[in-house]
Image (cartoon, rainbow, N blue to C red; front, side):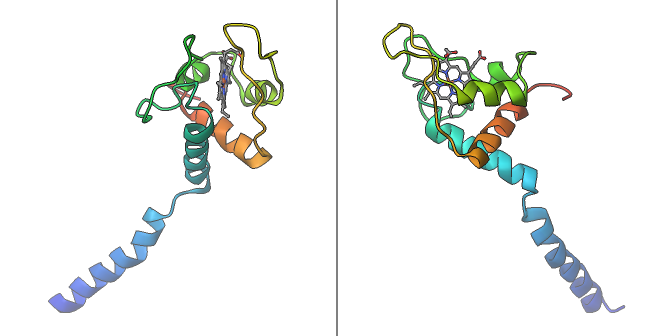
Length: 122
Ligand code: HEC
């Protein structure tokens, strides 16, 4: 192989590998959507990501998503159940969480994102 041909072969390999490396896996894409939804809907009251732009506004802050994820009692099912019901009468203080009507796919993405914040082996 000439040097040019070798260089071209390397280049061709790099070009064909690049889209594969750049394309997120379905799981990574779901986590990214879950993170984005969390930042949009949940971050006013929860720390959903350590680098979120602004801090929650509550006087009695809601638990961070990281601490929720690392509570041994937390499972996908417990999160789904929690998010499906309303706990707050809109008067009692400190407030309880209201119900957020997320469409099913967003609920799945947000739950995957929360569980991805769990430390150590899953
Ligand atoms: C208006 C403020 C507010 C928003 C917005 C909000 N939450 Fe909450 N959340 C709270 C408060 C306050 C609590 C703690 C009291 C309670 O359990 O209701 C809480 C508790 C929780 C818990 C239970 C934590 C535990 O200890 O088990 C989960 C899970 C949760 N929120 C998820 C979410 C998700 C996901 C979103 C976005 C879709 C969200 N929250 C949006 C205020 C909020």
